[in-house]
Amino acid sequence: MNEKKQLIEYAIQDIVEMISKDQNVEYDEAMNFFYESEVFDKLQDVETGLYRESSAYIYDLYKDELNFGHIVQAEI
Image (cartoon, rainbow, N blue to C red):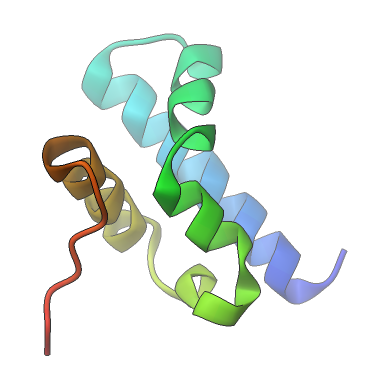
């Protein structure tokens, strides 16, 4: 497994655990929630570079997607 794919896998594990804890759902259910998100698709696409961000940052994007129906990224 190359380094990028490994970073993506670590981030997915962290985020699914966060979803599971925050939403008080089983790990498998949290995994399904995340796998159906736009954030998950962007994370899988190495061209976006999202895999380089922290798990907490990616999770915040996921929560924004839940709240607003799409990814909301702050402008710098």
